[in-house]
Length: 248
Ligand SMILES: *[C@@H]1O[C@H](CO)[C@@H](O)[C@H](O)[C@H]1NC(C)=O
Ligand SMILES: *[C@@H]1O[C@H](CO)[C@@H](O)[C@H](O)[C@H]1NC(C)=O
Ligand SMILES: *[C@@H]1O[C@H](CO)[C@@H](O)[C@H](O)[C@H]1NC(C)=O
Ligand SMILES: *[C@@H]1O[C@H](CO)[C@@H](O)[C@H](O)[C@H]1NC(C)=O
Image 1 (tube, rainbow, N blue to C red):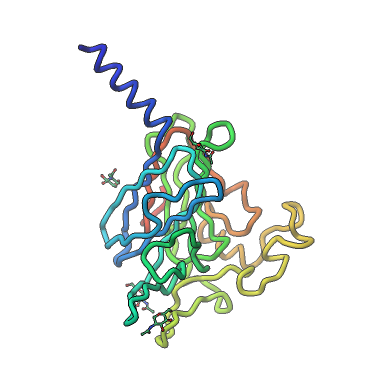
Image 2 (tube, helix red, strand yellow):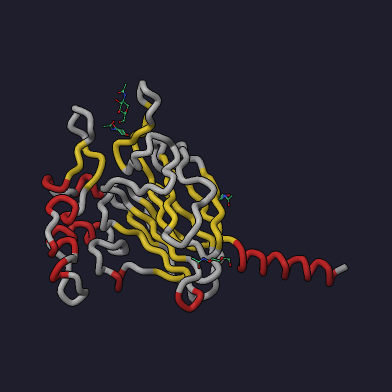
């Protein structure tokens, strides 16, 4: 009997290792958010590409253990009188809850994953390269010893955002729904790390990227911010928290 039980567990562990990784979402914001998922070029879409997550709610999603893609959350979403769904931040312009392969409009805090990548490692990060719309954290759970810890951005960068980067709500009340990147606002090569700045040695932090880095040292603040912003683990599931009180 014991041997069957042992085989069962061995099989379960192998199945987990070979087949799937769980993303467990929890919403600690005092309001509803609408998470979205976008698979990378050679990965299949997850079972949902957009869903609603009420305050305090959690939800689990399974991904193939070699999945790559990005996850973000939309805020202030509603369905208008013509039945079109849209959001004041992170909107994917499908007019529906599901993003169906569309990305979010910046600014949006992104969580990026490459599972089972180089050396069999999962790579994960939080990126503010496309701006910030709400605090997020990613924490590996149950991975092998030697895994990196949680990453994320717990600060509310909207309140620290330089006026020229603020994303005003598409409503008249003067509220801010996000903080844009300087690349998105000004489109200059030195902020985007494009053109002659398309090189890690030539594209460094700027006064704008440093606003993001100072508030959230673990998150990407410009495209070549790899050294302090890329994290790895093997064999983990991932806890994704919106509006975490802290990252660790
Ligand atoms: C997801 O994480 C939360 C918070 O850690 C936990 O309470 C919940 O049981 C988890 N859900 C699943 C399905 O793992
Ligand atoms: C992931 O694994 C599946 C099944 O082994 C394979 O068909 C697919 O090409 C892999 N995808 C990537 C992105 O490596
Ligand atoms: C967006 O949603 C938040 C949280 O519900 C709310 O406080 C804020 O007023 C909303 N902003 C707009 C412009 O509707
Ligand atoms: C609903 O939103 C769509 C897409 O933004 C827009 O084209 C349409 O005019 C809106 N309808 C109403 C009644 O506001």
